[in-house]
Length: 115
Image (cartoon, rainbow, N blue to C red; front, side, top):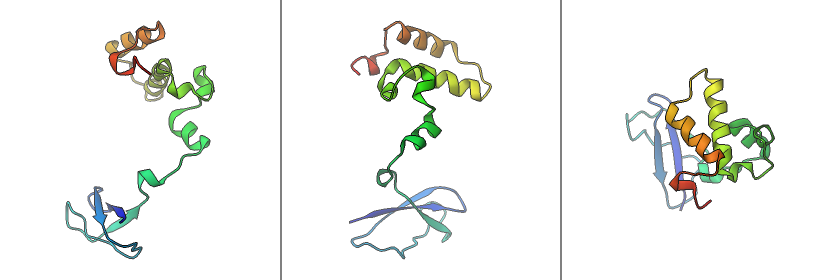
C-alpha cells in the first residue's frame, strides 16, 4: 500500500496520498491550498545516495581530516558547521564555537556522547 508525496506548485507544500494499489496516474489536489497543480515527488526513503551525492551535500570527509567514516565521528560535525558558516559569510555563534572546541577536546554534548 504505497503512500505518494506530491509538491504543490502554487504553495510549495507537500501532500501525502495513500492508496491501496500502485497508481502512477493519480494527481490529488493540494491538502493545504486545494490547488490541482501538484507533481509527484520521489519519497525520501525511496532514494539511495551515492558517494558523490553525499560529498555534494555535506562536503568531502577528506577535506575535514577524516576517512570514509568521518561523518560518524561527532568531532567532524564542528568542521561541517564551520565550513557552512564560512560559505554563507556568517559568524559562528559563540555558544556553537564553545561546543565545537569542547568536542575537539573530547567533551561531547549529551546527545552524542554514546556515538
